[in-house]
Image 1 (cartoon, one colour):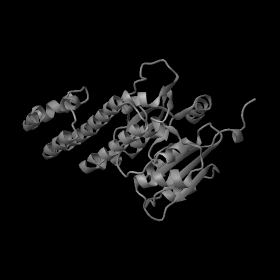
Image 2 (cartoon, rainbow, N blue to C red):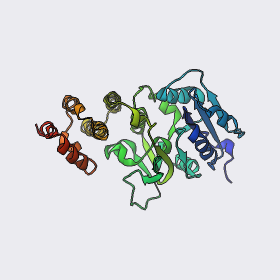
Image 3 (cartoon, rainbow, N blue to C red):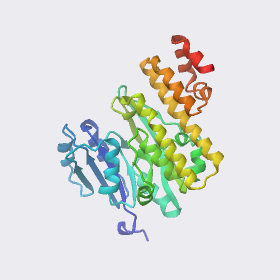
Image 4 (cartoon, one colour):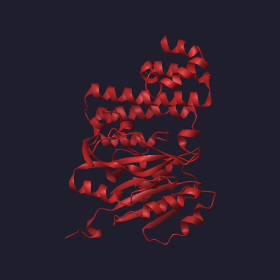
Length: 328
């Protein structure tokens, strides 16, 4: 006999939003379209100045709970407010107000894994939509080309392969809400607050993985990674230290911890380099290299990769001193 909704865990889809009126309807509709029955969809409007309020108040589905703040929490502050103050679910997934689900069975399949396994999170893959062109691309995952439908992995060992290589996203990660609060999710107001929090969480046990694309992450000028300045990326080093401290607390192997830290550092500085390249802002190179030296980051490991070598060559042609920095 099938379980009734009352016997199923409550899953919260939390949707933080701020001035995303052009996207929010699709995000909410995709959440309400989920086939899982014991579901709440919680929207926290961070005092939007557009017509977000009117759009959200047009929904009549009782599973939708709409909250509007009188002041602005900010991106990470809103994440924290929702997780600690607004949601009721035992499990939660964050769907930003400009993203949306494409697979109506995602939550149902995630809960099936949760019920059968002792996991702290269940993830899946996602696609990226470039809003300016409408083009879709797959976020790479080390499950690409694998016929495995679902898998259960040791979270820490999976992170060692490289957390970003898992292909997980905020919108594709259903996580244990109580554990997330216990380890201090969204405590640091940094651009990588989501991935830093997730990396600490998956160290706590096994994670489930659904090997398919279940949603769309929209890439546009208002993404935090697009409008953030260099300082925002340097600040993420705080998050890396938090991940390291959590691994030490859990008595993980010191060599494995250092491997994980090195990989995280390399990713951060590649993102700084990408912005330097994007904005043709070569005057930032000396500061970047000073920070890399202070953090003992392997320079050529970053720049001589498949994703970095083209940019490296172009910057070298435009800015010859770059090679001096690179090889000294």
